[in-house]
Length: 106
Image (tube, helix red, strand yellow):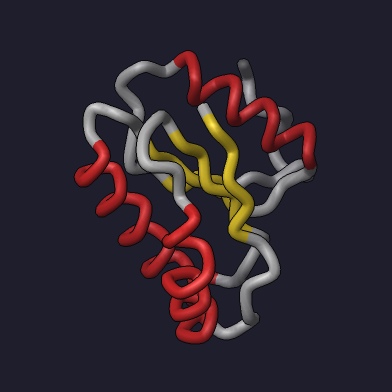
């Protein structure tokens, strides 16, 4: 599962969505399972991020597309390993939190 960083986007949801579509989307690899990494953001970003991931998952099937938001490098690596092993999981946006219930079980 290839990791693609969609980081450094504007703080506002509308600006972030516009920049993602202009800067990040054209750089996506043509095929293969993909994990998009977003920076942590407030709730206003969830809608556009989930819509992007779900649409990409539909368009790229049978390849899988998922995304994570926030979390440390270790949390992202754990989520990436988990998702790579979860053969049927696609179109998901997972919010990572290193301060919550514990690390992602891999």
